[in-house]
Image 1: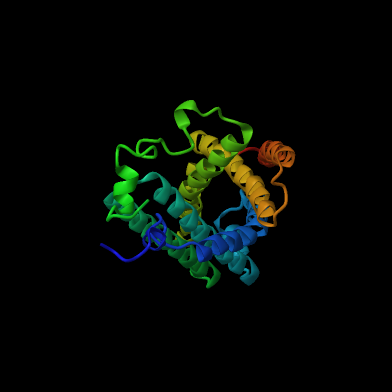
Image 2 (image 1 turned 90 degrees about the vertical axis):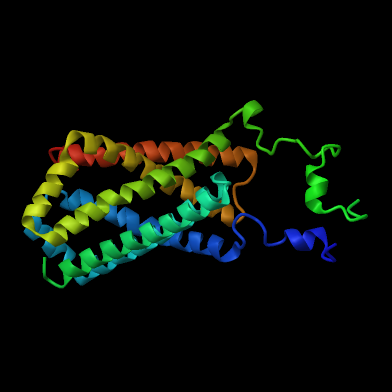
Amino acid sequence: MSLRSPLGRVRGLGSAKSGAHHWLHQRLTAVAIVPLSLWFVNAILTHMHDDHAEIVDWIGSPLVAALLIALIVAVFYHAKLGLQVVIEDYFHGELAKVVLLVAMKLGLAFGALLGVVAVLKISFGSA
Amino acid sequence: MWGGGTSLEQFLTANDTPMANNPLSPHLQVYRPQLTSILSITHRITGVFLALGTVMILYWLVAAASGPAAYAEAQRCLGALPTQVVLFGWTFAFFYHLANGIRHLLWDTGWGFDLDTAYKTGYAAIAAAIVLTLLTWACVLAQGGQA
């Protein structure tokens, strides 16, 4: 028989095992994404008919490249935090949950990397 | 009540306890949906849809980094009608998630939890999403179509 109280044994055994930093990071990325995404939508409307030379020239500006990279990092991290909660809530089998979580996190990390590399390649003038 | 060597699991799963077979809330089979709960699940659904749609933005960026031929091909693909329909839905999902996300941030400050305000901000989020989506696509059409 365990000497621990029922509350002590249950603590930390929720679906996520932790919480405060996840909550805070979700809010911080959300606050960053509000102005960045509105800037991006406006930029797309301005540049959607640009040809390749014009779009490369636009992304070649350091400010634009930095804003795009900030948006990519914030969006993919925010997506990771959000999808993590969705998977934890709706997949109850431990194996399926862990496999999906790992695949989602690695996939989004690679997506963010791909976007950042593309922006850097353009902004360093080799596209 | 947990004395005598009865573990918590045994207590919770024992058939003679009133808690044993109770369904967990929300009781979806008998649950009457309201605006607030519908908006809440819509926030999740649009979030998942937006995450999937980031593939289109990555494709656009990678094509721009790959040269003029790849970029022209990407513009043709993204400008095709089926993609434009998906992009229209994605635009609505974006503005809804943005507006309702701001509603969430306001709740985080402790504001807007009373039922009357929660309904008003809920309707405001829907209205903002519809208006901003239509405004954005009016800009697209004004430039001769094709986002």
